[in-house]
Image 1 (cartoon, rainbow, N blue to C red):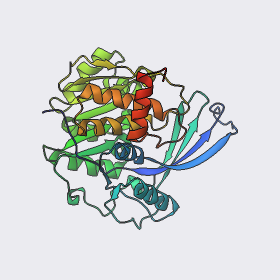
Image 2: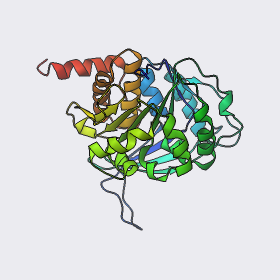
Image 3: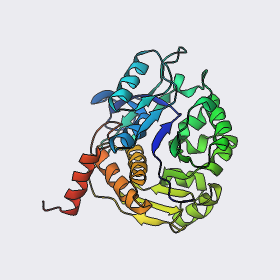
Image 4: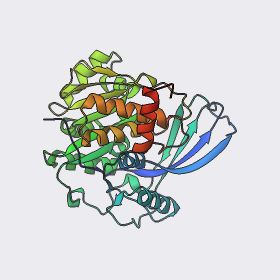
Length: 319
């Protein structure tokens, strides 16, 4: 397999609404804490589609969206970003929400309440019109939902060989049913996750052993990206050394890490589509994630123009 060059990013997964609260600390069990501010924004699977679209990669959403206020917000935001919505609204209810508690150092903790996005509904994934050289994105949330996870795991093995399957298992990596994960991983072309999640998946925190145990579970010549926050990322597989290549990130002051991984993945895929090699694409993705964490909220990925200006400034700090 050559380096993936997806020409469109397609998500069949879940988009919901983020309710973001800034807290001085997480309350103890049975306790309470006063939030200093609250914002509501479209999040979940929207973040990666927005990140890719802002960097010039055409994107489309083939997941469920509901008929209530959350669904209305989601459709409006998808349209605003130029992301195609491939399904009509579901009559089964509204989209769910995620409570995002952000502490002063920018770390975030989630509580997710699913809605129609967690169900397969009346759609058949086999009815989705896939384009040549599509990139198909899945998240661990999609695979954890019982109905949606089973539907996706039955669909994935039959995907055409020229499609790029991208998986970010996310914080729930340890909760994905073994049968579902076992059906999806052998078809994955790009697996991207943070170091905590990689440790859970590999049952080991040493980077060399993470790569040694994880890469054989993926499609031949797949790329594995372990995101490491302020330390950038380590990636291996495909045309790279299987022991991993470290790619550093610009130094910034973090305000909110929500959506940083999605910004990284969306920009990485857009950079591959533009013809960059994986290491150069990862460097650009690291910069996008660094810029994203300086902004509060979920879908904070920069536009291509903003990212170019940020990279130029970091190449010429006296400017």
